[in-house]
Amino acid sequence: MGEIVKKITDAFVHIVPNSRSAHYCDPVSWSKSIGMLIPPILNDEFSMSGLQSSVVHLLDVFLGRYDFTGELGDLALAERPWLPSLHQEFFRLLQSSPSVRQYVCTSKSRSLKGQFDRVVRLFGSEQGFLGAHRINTIGFLEIGIKTGKHFSFVCFFIVCDE
Image (cartoon, rainbow, N blue to C red; front, side, top):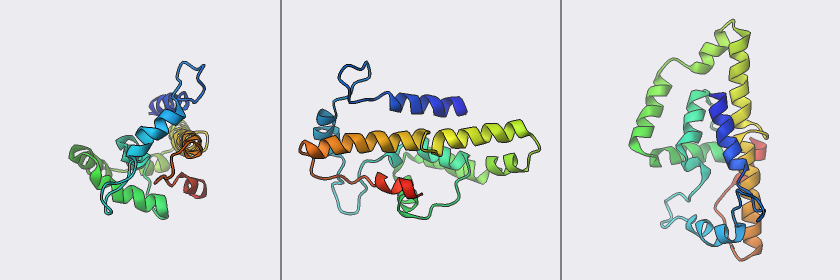
């Protein structure tokens, strides 16, 4: 699992605004095309965000996230019903199964605990997926705002506090 999270993070980190990079993505073009698709059409709809990725919700469930307090936690729970129904069913089945976190915590295996801790850090730390996502997204949004994108519905500035 750790290798999968690391590969997802590495792929995300390699999307850069440097035009000489093999993984170049023009932040101005992104802001004026994909970035403009972000606003919701109706007032009671959600805008496009990283929380619409099933991967984020899968890792939350697998790692046993239980604290959804705060603005991003509330948003994560509110957006989950918008995911594909089969994904939602899989999350419900995983949540109703014995907890991986509980199993690891009660295990006497230091190796297992170390591997689980590694996955948690690869996903949730500033150096992990969520930190990389926040940093890259803020960079792209900042460039977009400076070049004519006048709004954003993304609340990544809150991630630091959670």
